[in-house]
Image 1 (cartoon, rainbow, N blue to C red):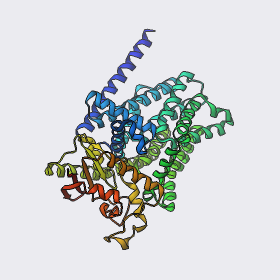
Image 2 (image 1 turned 45 degrees about the horizontal axis):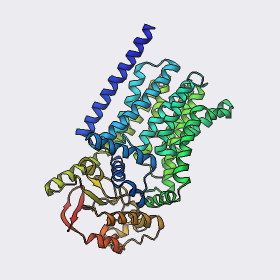
Image 3 (image 1 turned 90 degrees about the horizontal axis):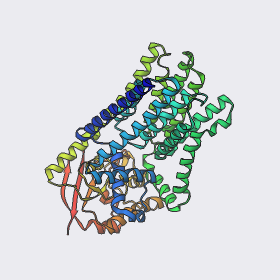
Image 4 (image 1 turned 30 degrees about the vertical axis):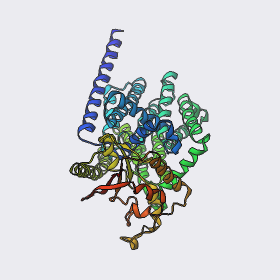
Length: 506
């Protein structure tokens, strides 16, 4: 009994010590050196907008999935309550999620195979450092999903017969997994394929209905039913968002090619795992998880960095589980593959930081500030404006983090022959795009923003033509009427960013 008490005290001390290091380092890192990801900044600002608008938020029909609204609204309320920077509150919330997921995985692994505290530390490092290096996706939806799937996959490979983990812990696992899957429910496919693979191998279909699966499945089902199943307005807005991102979708050939490239390591690991004598069941489950992550990315047809993170994390766990069985040359080869993949993502982060730094310099020189002001944006890409507004305590007064529907309207003109030409104004005849634009204009008309920033930098995701916002929207009487209320006070044309800054004329 004394020995058990000493072990519990040691575990508690380890957890508290590691938690203190995690919070201190990440908060210092993001507080003084690194901005959060532009998409995370955009979601944070949407959360603040929902809090500021209160009940009227829904009257604008703004697309904001319920779990994200709750999560980021909570961040806003906590930020207001304690007077902390909003981005740092979200970092702290992400830290808490990582700690819970890793603690759950460690507890499962210790009960099943007697894992040492080193497993806890390595898992925490993997779920913290890799997302930061992986194009700074720390705190994004896919990262939170990975935090939920980590203990699940640990459980599935550590307790083959599901006999060592008690019902109470499995309920906790199912609830945690279900909650994190709400952030990107498409990744439920990973769980489904893993469970189907295991049930097929055991020839026990009934094993699909284990406690943790029922708990997680019920959460995801009820969420989708209450959000989309019962509310036709939410379904319409959801459909409009798909039409808004048309320009960012890759062509079918590229989509299949990227799926094949990202699934290739799974076949390589399948082969070397079997050659090295790895358990057949474990190998099959990892292959199913990797396949599910790749298919999920394929269905989204965009292949952004955050879509690749869950795939990379599955491969990392698969490699970790079998590294001792693999030959040295195999470990070196796969370690190099992961290193190159992560380094490639890390290197691409620099351009976002350069743009943000240039925006900071331009705003300082112009003597303008967004602090405490309602800032309307016309921008093709979320960066660097979303990060800047978060860092300086502004209120983004635009329903979405960028105006992707305009790029979708202009995509038919995105040809080399049209480069540099004046393009016709957008028609916005497609119902979804028309609705999203009307929602934004309604917000601006009902509560006029203090500032309007029109970006002249990014053509993303278009390749050849630039987006001239004033020309694109020149046939919209609502936009023209609003623009007359503002006057330009600063225009900046720099190396990596160009924009015009307007303030209200009256």
